[in-house]
Image (cartoon, rainbow, N blue to C red; front, side, top):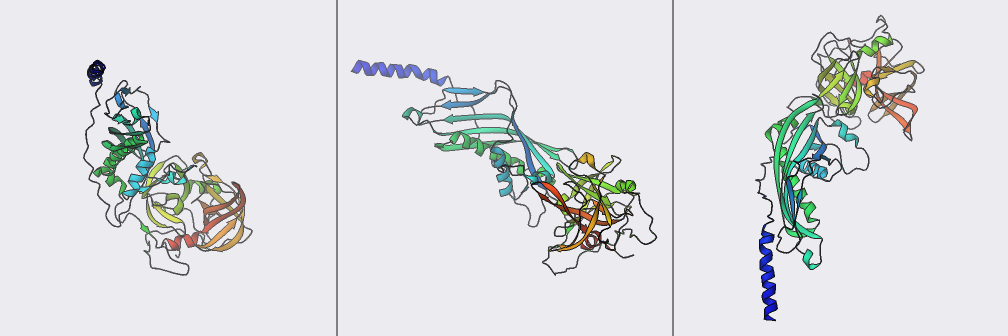
Length: 436
């Protein structure tokens, strides 16, 4: 019996040098980022994490795995150098949770089963690539017949890019390092270590001073009309410098082909709407739901010229917004202050469905005005689709009578019941004079 014990001891001792040859990867703690709260009342630009990949140097050791209570590594993993798309990975949810919990305005929900339309409104898109990963994972109960619980620690390096959907270019690059440790084994512990580590790296970006400057809007960039209950009125700024051209009996008729030259494509994120010029010095109208809380958007004219404009005023309840381009010599449309008669022909102009269809003109008749909680709307059977929003509805003289806002559908098919905001009421809500 004694000889057998000695033999066992010798066998154990002979294994120690072999086990010692496989070392754990070096994993170092990383200080927690100094993530400050935004100032009270700060206006934050919408962000959306659009892309997350993993690509590391081929052959680089990334993982050690142990299957005993001593957590002595028995297997190693290395990178194959291939770029993997983690677009559907739960790490995107981790980023959104970290950003939301720290006061950032996040659009796009990776948990949704269908495409989230909110993703298209983000002014800043976030992309990241995991370029380094070192983790030591241990399954301490595996030699006791329970292979599920695991624990460990990890380092992760993420290379971030921030893309401005308005400027159409990458405006910031940063690299952050995350650290995560799980001391007690749990089911799914190896995945939890990754989540903790990635969350730490994400907080590094969220705490970056330059990144926070990008997402914070300057004070006074645009006023938001107060949201009032029905019947309430409130004082608002009067935009006396916005002088629209009112149509009168002697105002010349504008051919429809010329009307489209005053209509613009409004590009926000990866979505679009329409708008139109109301003054020669660069003021334009569109819908609030096209620009939402954006401070800047890009507009494109029919000749292909593209410029960045400011959102200078908006009214969410009435669904209108005022844009300003720093340019002169534009050709504004005339505004018809009188109601259009029932049965008169009307023509919506905009970009239905596709940006390439900007300047599309359709035709219908005015079906009359209806009262909605937000105010009056003009009903018409004139065909509109998504992308027409914010474009003008003109009469047979080419003068603006309303702004395209919405249409009714059945099973996704338009049914010819569409609604337009009377132009006079839209201007009034924004504080723009409608008298000579």
